[in-house]
Image (cartoon, one colour):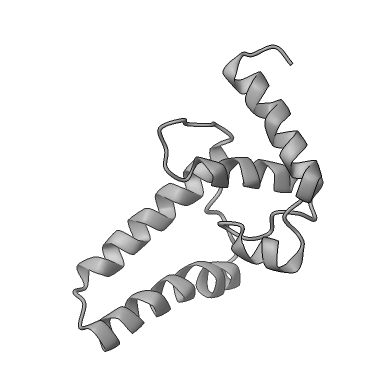
Length: 115
């Protein structure tokens, strides 16, 4: 998880910094938000990135499904390409029944229940 934020210079600028700053800048321009929003957005993004890449399933974490989807992405490689799954459902890359079955099997294993 600690290496989850690793990227080349170009990836870091265009994939990490730029998208985060655009959202915060738009809030500042159109909603007159404070610079603290940039800090909150950056902290949220960093925490979410590290938890999603940790491979741990935290039952108390509100975005725990993102961790499962990310693990499935590494399992199947061509599924669960987005963050929250909305675009995956739209474009048919959400894994469908295979993801549902994989998720159920992994949750049984994680929670210690017999299959």
